[in-house]
Amino acid sequence: MTLPRVKATRTTPAFWSRARGIAHAANGMLARIPHSPIALLARFSIAAVFWKSGQTKVEGFALDIVEGVFEPGWPRLSDAAVALFRDEYRLPWLAPESAASMAALAEHGLALLLLVGLATRLSALGLLAMTAVIQLFVYPGAYPTHGVWATVLLLLIARGPGTTSVDAMLARRGQRADAGPDTTLAIEDADRRSDRG
Image (cartoon, rainbow, N blue to C red):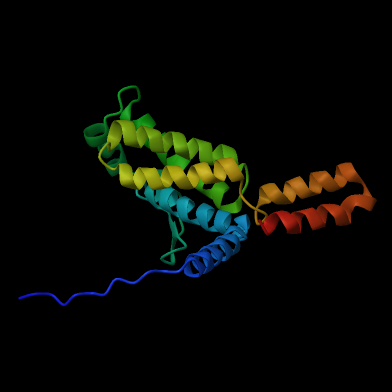
């Protein structure tokens, strides 16, 4: 069986010029996506990952806003978490009880700080260090997952939490206190411009 011949066509320089113009316009529109909604989504998403992991290490208390679960109580470290650190993770420099406690505390505390956008860069740095430990010592074959986590955390470290955060609110309050009443409107204008990209 033979395939039908396809007639070759020449594209005109006008076609390529128009295609470049469309690509340039699309690139310009995408470059104007503001950072704050992206940062808010990044903070919520990575906080959810670590919070849910922390929840697997405690008993007596459950809170999952994604799935709508709330079980009040006093949290305590689960025996299963200690066994996991003892039998599977086997970190070389920490006792299983200490490692499980530190991981549960960090996963809950740093995730909560990220979620509200308080000490965002330091919280993201702490979770990035935790991600590196998990990648290097616990699950070295899970780079695709850990690479995504690291990318989100590095975005927050490099660009900050965005304007919808406690960090931004505190920064605005500090600028207003330093600047005086005449420059308050200028600071608010700068906030709006920086949120646009």
